[in-house]
Amino acid sequence: MKQRIAILDYGSQYTQLIARRIRELQVYSEILPFSTTAEKLKENLPAGIILSGGPNSVFEEGAPGIDKEIFELGIPILGICYGMQLMSQALGGEVMPGKAREYGKTEMTTLPGNDLFTGLEERFTVWMSHGDRVAKIPEGFVVSATSENCPYAAIRNEARRFYAIQFHPEVVHTNHGQEILSNFIFKICSCRGDWKLTSWIDETIEKIKAQVGDDEVVLGLSGGVDSSVVAVLIHKAIGKRLHCIFVDNGLLRYKEDLQVEEMFKSKLGLDLHIARAAERFYAALSGVSEPEAKRKTIGREFIEVFAEEARKFSHCRFLAQGTIYPDVIESSSSTKGPSQTIKSHHNVGGLPPDLKFELVEPLRDLFKDEVRAVGRVLGMASELLDRQPFPGPGLGVRILGEVTKEKVELLQQADLRVQEEIRKLPNYKSIWQTFAVLLPVKTVGVMGDQRTYEYTCAVRSVDSIDAMTADWTRIPYDTLATISNRIINEVRGINRVVYDISSKPPATIEWE
Image (cartoon, rainbow, N blue to C red):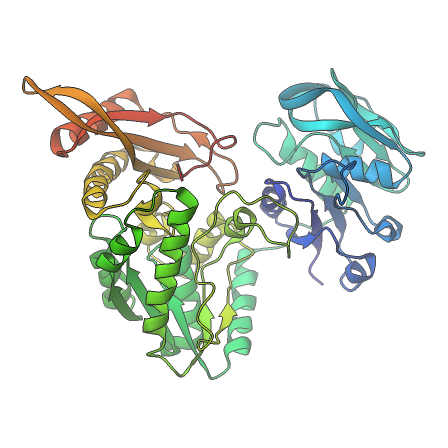
């Protein structure tokens, strides 16, 4: 039986990151709603349980709770941040508002004898994010670590194999975070570490065959990594019974429609149908400037165009989507946990009633780097798999304010030059994402002794593993200078270029 770690989701924006870190250790992890009962867990008993962090206070009315029978299952439990406070409160301890809120990097001192910190130095930096704190630990627990503002930074009950920490080991800001999770997974939960993507691929292909049977599938292909891997994966399972629809919304990268047609129709031999609807999207976006309104407008139009194309395949019962884990967490869902919505995500949801498709979402439990790894096992070209992520709403969320055809063309040209220069860097493949943003700001400039009053372009580049956290890329000054010079000199309409040095959190990767 496949070993797994169950993560109960209390709404932290890092919940999916916990799952990702565990999978890096080759142990399968699964995120479940916080409302999951002990009885439900017994159906496929996990090797261990992690209680995630969350934005709530345990004092709030209606705050997410836990089935106390879970503590009687006899398996290891790790509480993180809110999970620590919840565990403490549920087991008879006391939680109270902290005298000083701890947010960010904090020096923590460990005490000897804790399996969770085996092999680690006595003092190291961790990432705190809490206001409440444990004031009295439950009976049977002892202190494992302290910080300046948190006397109970970590606690444990070794007899019951319960561990709780007030910091986030899953984020890169915590030193030794992966070692802490590793100690929990292997030393405390006794996991084997034998989960591999190759096995996942074989299992998933069989699941697709079983789900689809002799029926056919329609897929909204974007040309990005996720939908491309889904297309190849499903094609491997059912062949020509997969029909791909590519919607050209006029918000794509420069000549992307032609590149997609060449790659998928000519090279991979997929059944590809292109719907050219740029003018329709521009008309719908006229006068719309609020970010969420733009996303919803683009999503609505996409659904309508896609639906028109999909009706041509009246024999299809199934709709495939390239949904992955970060889509799920940032879109928020009551089926997963009480996470707060950051942005609406572009996906083929809300189709008209006459299109009663059943969903096929083979990637919804994978992270982006895992999706790429799947693609490599499937033999897909690196030029496709190494493409940087591109948002579903396209350039519509990289043009701040109202979107027009002229602005799209301006940004396409600016972004083309950014891409051309960034690809020259030796570390290009390690950069998560680099792109240009068109700001609704005009500034005065001087070109050829003439006064100009033109748009400002921002360049954004981030390093990340899975888009849950990201740091801005330290691009060499010479490359930035070349990018700036090329945009200003070659793209008529832009006379100023700035570089975004914000990390996630607190910023998001995309500007809108």
